[in-house]
Image (cartoon, rainbow, N blue to C red; front, side, top):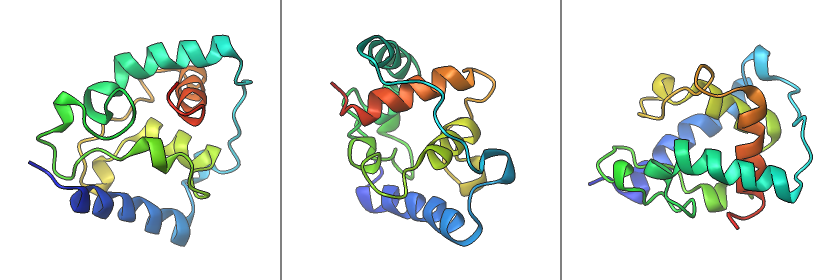
Length: 130
């Protein structure tokens, strides 16, 4: 079973990449194209449940059934999305590209989800996993 320390280590790799090199050029300056209306947040919840909760958990606590055996463990999204570095470009990049480059099993969602769907997931997470 993975530990929170391992999750933090994987997250640190992303952070170092972001702080040292910024996000890849394709994501620089990205800003959400949607407003976080109740409808958007509800759609984001549905998308999150279908694509993210199995690893990150229903409430973003990294405790999803499929994530229990992952090393490093899934990110603690409930808290992570509140951090200053969790800007639009960073979150779009991380969800779109996944974690293969950083040695995590986070899949890339750029082919499975539209950019608008990713923004809806981000809106849901930022709303505090209501």
